[in-house]
Image (cartoon, rainbow, N blue to C red):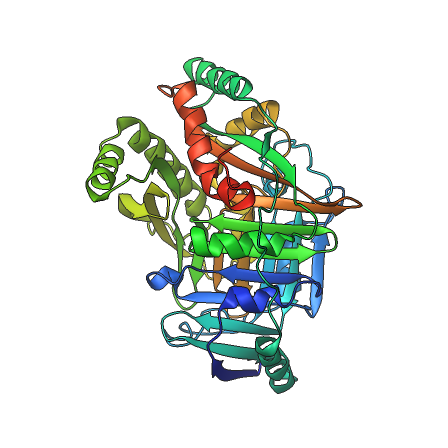
Length: 451
């Protein structure tokens, strides 16, 4: 059992703390909205004890490398308890969408300069309890006390001020509205021909931050304007990522049995202007045959993926077509659960389930091939930001509502995307409008105008 030190500290907003760490080595923030049990915890870490980075041409087995980087799992019979952080040291990482080419028999072009996988092993970190308004400084290993003290000192760093004007000019589409509608029509034709049942097709936008602006400024704005339960930030080298995701990919609760949960989102509608209109939007989404069909296909796909790593007969769907409400959208969310086989590590679970089914389609491999023929490489978009604990626990997001930044001589360039699940009775114009609804919060935070 690894030695641990947990020091209780006074509350400070995690985004403020994170902004004071920009420039450190492999800085990460996993940031919740504080709403409900899923939104209770946020985490911040920097300067990991070990870094694992898998470039596209790297011949190593990425999933075996994950297990090797994490090391042996501490034998725990139960989780740490509701008053203590679920994550108390281990890996925090970014898996790009194209890591899926290492899990499934499909060839995917890569999004230069993004690696397939990058993660750090963090033995010192901060955990923010939004419910109790306290912060835990955590240290792991022989130097646990010193590591916890070092993490606690991050709370005293000055935060980066928010940016006072627009962060970027209006976003420029990578794929025009007409081109996106044509791509949707091609997918519908492939569905009619029996090639696939569903594919998630994304549309991208690009731009540059104005002089003096930093990617963390986008996170600061989104945290105020459109908080999300699986928001995130990662920066390393000349790359940075800001995510405002509402979607969980996989969660594993340690113990015996090890419970795994997936919560795919399929089905989206905008918020109403008042309470009555908003309720009407919810009813429209609940009763949408198209959205329910889209959701059900992905539930079946996730049941199949989880069955690869779960005890036979343990996979179930306790919640189907639940409504979840966010700042500017309502979503249909289903829950798939199972009991992970005790001898399987993080690498085996990711190998069996990656990339997330909600952003590929069904059947998964055929849908990925269709996507590759219609879209440029996705990079971090539709990948996952995750933590994996020394106790065998895991939580991970689906990187939708995500902006990827690359720093060059001119400053920070970025790309951001939004997608829609296409099925047989999809309407290309309606699907294109859905992508614009989904990108609206990011577009407004960046430029002050809709895309």
